[in-house]
Image (cartoon, rainbow, N blue to C red; front, top):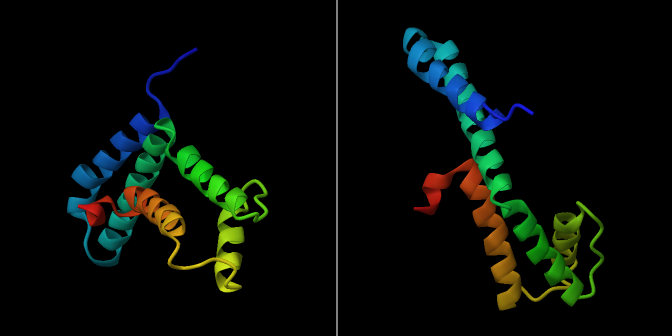
Length: 120
């Protein structure tokens, strides 16, 4: 089985070529669009890295444990919707430190992908 380069490496190289070789020659709307593509590629790279480190599973596990502890249904891939519904219906106490910890963990996990600079 061939393991190199993996999808992360390919995306990283393609993003670098885009930024170093193509973007400098673009202007206006085309430059803006190319930078948006580079940003999306960066997010995809970070998401791949987070998956490799088990980050999504840890966040999902934390949410599942919270929902189970509050006797809320936790169907696969529906945890966030269940949590949102319970919050809207005021079935959870907004001052609950465990709830705040779960929400903070979910927010930080998303920020590590979408805007890691915000966490600094």
